Length: 117
Image 1 (cartoon, helix red, strand yellow):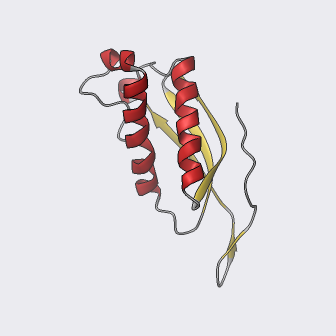
Image 2 (cartoon, one colour):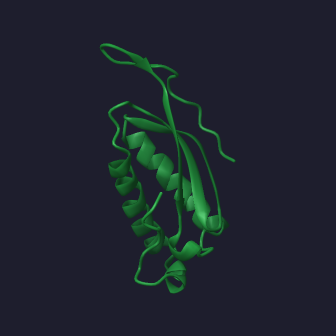
């Protein structure tokens, strides 16, 4: 289970100090077991890259199984979780379909992720 050290423990705004952590789980469409070892490695690398490019959140811990992934993230108070999930699911699916086209045959309609999280 890869562990990433948090950049900072306590966040400060003008009137408060906070430390928000979210445990996010998202599943593959129809719970298909398409996240094999090489696919999971590429997915984790992509998610870490997305976290490096956005200063409003970072990954504390990330792991997964063949049909879902778990992320524990440290976030700013102003972070909008639905928009974060949109930024994570769309690009990661496109990247995995491009690098691992064999997973498309297990999924209908070209969707990798279930709409829930």
